Image 1 (cartoon, rainbow, N blue to C red):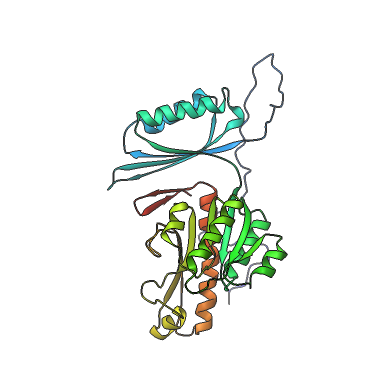
Image 2 (image 1 turned 30 degrees about the horizontal axis):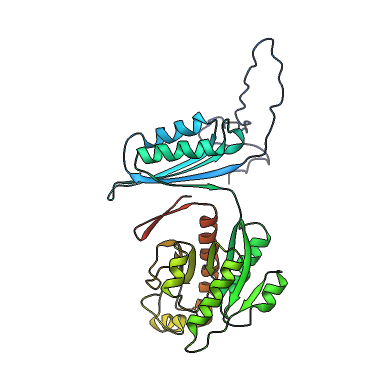
Amino acid sequence: MKSLPARGEWTDATDVTPIELRSDPPLEMSIPFALGTQQSSPIKRPPQLATLLVGCRDQLGATTALGQVLEAHGVRVQSSDQHVDRSARLFFQRLRFDLSTLTTDRSSLEKGVREICERLGMEYRLYGDRRRRTAILVSKVDHCLYDLLARHRTSELNCEIAAIISNHPDAGSIAQHFAIPFHHLPVVTGHKQQQEAQMMEILYEHGVELVVLARYMQILSPELVERFPTRIINIHHSFLPAFVGASPYRQAHEKGVKLIGATSHYVTSDLDQGPIIEQETVRCSHRDTVEDLVRKGRDLEKRVLAAALRYHLEDRIMVYGNKTVVFD
């Protein structure tokens, strides 16, 4: 029997000398300063970030023209992302830039952007970084509500939660715990219109700009939806339209589904058919009980709703037709 090598020795049957492994440090660039100049720390100003979203017919020169306008005003672009829908021949772009280096003023910058967008036939929106006032609507099921409030408390969601509105009293203690105004507006048969009128008053009193339906189990009227176009976000399971009505997870279990999901979308007057913002799925098996499906579905709903809200707050979404472009 061949003897084993001593511990710590290299052996190689081909007598090839083993390569010595080493870990090199990352490449470090050194930029020489001109002779006679003294290195000094630049003055750092706090960033004042803003976002420009544009959409137009696909054409040459759009990206260059926007970049030149921003550069002419001393604005430093932090990030740029774009998308072309080849079939629709549409161009979309999201520019994120720092206003702290602005050499003119905001009015001049806005005028310059408006002029170039009008010349190129672009639709555009300019957003400053501010916390949008948001209302959360919820019924009895509160897992999405808890998740949003926890994420908001840890500064994951850049908004002000101005109010929580519910057609049941159950969420009152949750709102109290997070020190958010709570409004209980019960829905009485035959008086749904009055309930929505009260809701509208509350939304206006709180200066609400965005509404989130965190499992709010009431259908909003077309009149209310029209007041907040692409500013109402909903969440639901992705069984629609296969399993409608009560107990969709039980129906799915009885059918032996192997995949469940959740969808977040903007609310339109066409029930649950608005532009999709985010979706996720998870695999299921024959071992999963109804309770397992419910648990998996709720986890998906929390993540998908929170992601949709974050994308909206960060101005990452552009809507065209019944579709969305969501920039990473």
